[in-house]
Length: 357
Image 1 (cartoon, one colour):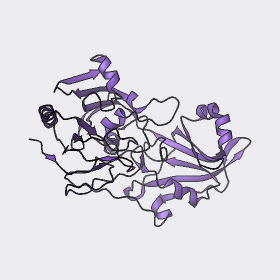
Image 2 (cartoon, rainbow, N blue to C red):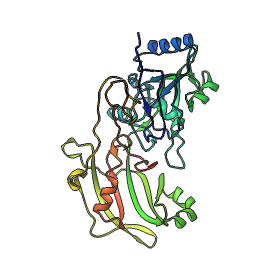
Image 3 (cartoon, rainbow, N blue to C red):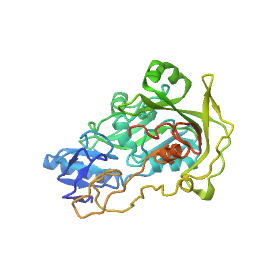
Image 4 (cartoon, one colour):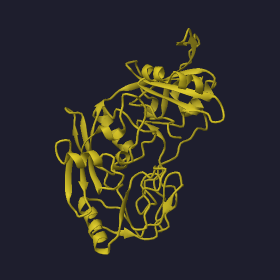
């Protein structure tokens, strides 16, 4: 039997919205989710399902029942031939990425943050960058939906097709997403090039930038004309092994310069083959708190739950679930921010390191 908690306060990651649900549930199975919905029907209560709590809106807030899916986080099937993976909807993309890594697979595109759930990231229409890439929901090939009356629907383009199209960006309106099947791609590496420009130049040449790089984005510095342009593209360049098995290493940083409109490495290319924390003493990262019990929200809620439970696990910003976003700024400071910088990332990193901040 599923147990509910009272007195739990939910806050989204940015602490812009919060609520105190009447009952807070953390089911571990489909049957327990069904129990919650049955109880809600009996008591005429509304039910909201929360993901990572990263939405800037109050979409997850309720004074009724809240279901937190974080304990339904298993990988159910990996089809290496089709390059597809089926998982429970509560799995964090950060954990999914590590599992895909074992099978030589990756997601073709991700948002700025990896500590979000599979069910939540599609339901909120999460996107990234790259004109040839769709939002993350376009990677969904099948899903399982539990409706309010307890019916389980298997949805895909060939089964319950209309519901499938709606459920891929469900906004929590259609029921509880139980499982998701994602189309993956072979694991890949990206080379990142960062250089300064102006807002006018980028906007005047936006089409050109979009065509030059598979994952193009720019960061505007408010109240100025300054922008940082970021290109990320597939590469087959050799990547050295991560020293000491560290997961937060940055390799092959090199300042580059413009020459006749092209980016060219300077003769004094800087080669960093050490963990970034060693290159930038004092650089730290949030620690995960893997604790059981009621939490204010799954993954990212920063408010302390008022029901006597421990703090929820606090997430770190990741690109492709492997490299945190925070090291980029110290890296640029290390190489002098006015330099053009190229970085070769190990892993399946894609755009999104600083997007959305």
